[in-house]
Amino acid sequence: MNDQETNRPRADRRANDRESVEARVAERLGGRTIALVGMMGAGKSSIGRRLAARLGLPFVDADAEIEQAANATINDIFEQYGEAYFRDGERRVIQRLLDGNPKVIATGGGAFIQPDTREAIRDGAISLWLKADRDLILSRVRRRSNRPLLKADDPAAVVDRLIAERYPVYAEADIHIQSRDVAHEVVIDEIFTTLDAYLDDKPDEGGS
Image (tube, rainbow, N blue to C red; front, side):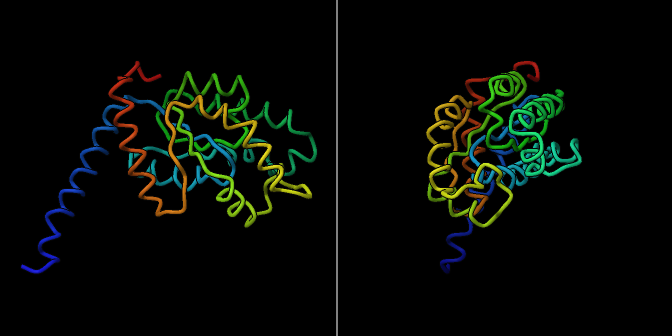
């Protein structure tokens, strides 16, 4: 028997274990939504889209929904109306998305920081914090120019400030997962394992 044949049963067992965990989590979610929270660049949209696919749920990017509702980009909303106006629209959009129909939602970096939005997420979803370290965030956000809060002379200083302000609030999320530069499926497998353990302690609460 060659090494490939020897390793195949082990690989099959891992695949079966993964499928069992996925099926168990999907069944035990009980109609609940999962809301991903965390800093810009943490991977909420890319991870959320793949997580939703594996759960067989719709995926919604809250920022995209805000832009569609306002018929304007987030940058334009910030520049024309200011952050307070944007946060109010963000709150209303997220409350609308938490309509009792299960889905995976990727929220903007500042959404969970707002008390009213955080309460809505707490009442209507399982919150999942994708926690990214400073260097990972900077390496990712520097590739894009659509981050209104980073339009500053020293983006690194802005990221440091936001981490200091936001991480204690993100820590209130139900589940914490470390975001890192690995294959997305590695992180998603970890999410399923953590969700499985979380649902042991938090059985279906009537679809809330």
